Amino acid sequence: SLYGITKLAGEHIVNNAECPTVIVRPFTIYGENGRKDEVIHRWLEQYKNGLPITIYGDGDSCRGYVYVRDLVEATVKVLTTEFSNNHEDFNLGGGEIVYLKDIIKIFEESFPDAKFVKIDMPVEDVYINYADISKAKEIIGFDPKPNFGNNLKRIIEEFKNAT
Image (cartoon, helix red, strand yellow):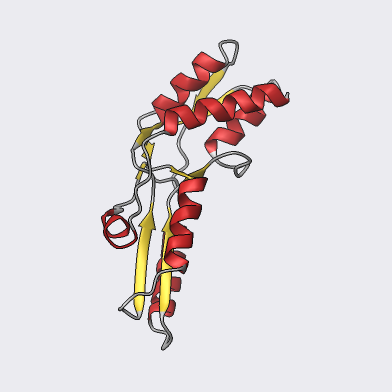
């Protein structure tokens, strides 16, 4: 994808710099007050506005969602660690792979009156996207807890209490 190509090009530029560099690659961040274009908050907004919840594809796509607090902790570790190599890079993804159908199920349970509509997945979207975090585990002790379902349910409850 163009998105991936531009990220790779940027990494090549950074890694050819003469000063020490560290690259952090976050994968599908979620949490409270998240980006409005990400699935969780887009669906919450659609529900709040009485619109059908749009599902891209068949629900079998998956992501390695990283909870924002886990990402912040890992980023602080990266920023406060001295490395022996001049160039380091870390994939920071979640501790579990989450299928879209799992998110759909939680939304259906949380909003039984919601209407869902399936539409084709955009061609530029990636069907499977999760991180190999083994290097981050080994070097900075990154160990995100597999807590997506509970975190999502809490985000939904906070949304319900605020509306």
